[in-house]
Length: 247
Ligand SMILES: Cc1cc2nc3c(=O)[nH]c(=O)nc-3n(C[C@H](O)[C@H](O)[C@H](O)COP(=O)(O)OP(=O)(O)OC[C@H]3O[C@@H](n4cnc5c(N)ncnc54)[C@H](O)[C@@H]3O)c2cc1C
Image (cartoon, rainbow, N blue to C red; front, side, top):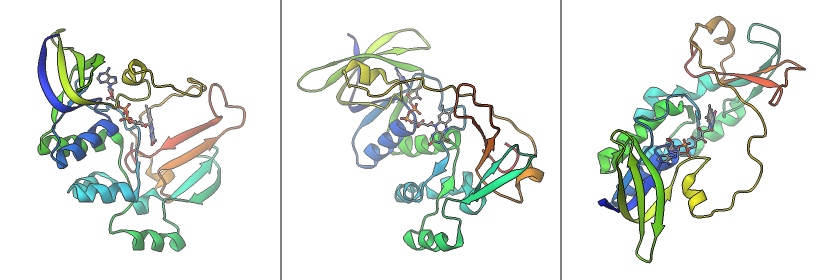
């Protein structure tokens, strides 16, 4: 194997786990390289509710301002609403995310930082910038294929998806942050428990001005209940705010 790269920690996957690991390792001066199969980061909103403790940790990393600038603030995260449709009957609201007045004081007193809502496709570039500016080397279009472990470390074989060439990366440690279908976990024989694929799911990103349906009852999650509409899933649809109130 043609080993062309050497590092202390090789991180497979540039999702939230891999990029956070890279950020913190670089902050502590541990050399690291990230390989990511695709040419860029998440292209859909995915994870979003960003807990107070997470924002606090990002504050330590000097990234809180960048997060606040992009995120929807706590006061607009509001209630969780239950309805038969966005334009139809509302069934109820549940105060969440520390927005109830009697809970908000607990949140305010607990930390200088605030819970917020930051879609994953906006969050990942912030983590990436933080990691890369501290020294992380990122290789996009680079797919992890296999690993060989010995007493001193690990040699991974990766493929450059742009050129098709394979090469080796030698590291003292390899961190598998390659998501729920992790090939790293499979290759090292980590046992998985539970059943996969128990329900269907479909995600649609839409842009439209929805303010007349939702601006008066701010929330990041509108649960749509229509009894009988339970094909392949949990019988509930979810209209999730990505950006207030038009995405
Ligand atoms: C449509 C959708 C909606 C979601 N909504 C929410 C939500 O509302 N709230 C919430 O908390 N969570 C949500 N999630 C889940 C959330 O996205 C995941 O929990 C989170 O992304 C996991 O982070 P991760 O870093 O462990 O893995 P991932 O984000 O999956 O990142 C793994 C990375 O590894 C890369 N990779 C995989 N294999 C290889 C390989 N062989 N070589 C190199 N790179 C590789 C992948 O391309 C990917 O970039 C949602 C997920 C999806 C798909």
